[in-house]
Length: 353
Image (cartoon, rainbow, N blue to C red; front, top):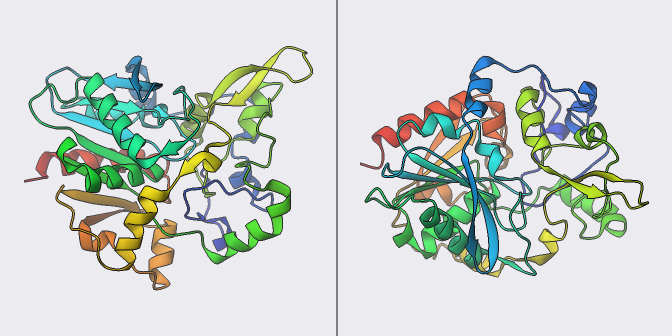
């Protein structure tokens, strides 16, 4: 969950993987990028203030018995866009991007099950995520304009969009992946996990799953990006972080504190079988060709680039066009929000043909 102001050595770049990775050896501006503000909001530019002032319609859609949080901008009847966030994130990660797209589209940002204000499940499945996405799109009127919506997903959300596009192409007009990768973690992360296996096991954070922070300042001070990376737009981080928290009772009964919204056991509950079977086909060069038009936008400093430079093959480039966003790490909407807006608006105006 974070970003910083200077280039950092290789150890500070993303550990491209869809599971949280924590290390107290990270530089403080990567480990705790909001701590220096002591709970105060960082200054922000006018464009950002104007964007978040355009409040969405907030509500819920039910899918597989779970209430899913949806935020919607734009008029009914316009072409639809569905925005899907990354791991342990929530719908408000798109709240400063969506208003720019809503000038021409009906735009919905959803919180995946187990994240944001959406309900939790005993098991999380890729097939269910695909059903959830369609339910949120239909429930907020994204199909009402006479054309199926375009699905846009970042990171883990991009994985969901790709899976849905391959398995259920009939539900979408096109798909955009934003800095999405499917490989396992790099060697240094595997080594780190091995060293800390007895300490953290499958818990997705170094804090206990039930950890409640006494003050908002303490909670914001613990916010970081996963995978870790530098970030300089701290006003975006602060906006996202404040919307990543819920009030919760303190364990000692002393009152209410703050805790993270996402299901802390999600990564233990996640059934990857659907995606893994698809990836095995890709490894065997037997994956069916995508029938949905797809584009991949990625940051030029993303771990994806590091891995490709090291010779890791990519099946994405064989399935879709790829567009690089300059001066961006993995969290493109934080690093280069206006560049991402410009790329999406230009792309959507000219593609698919």
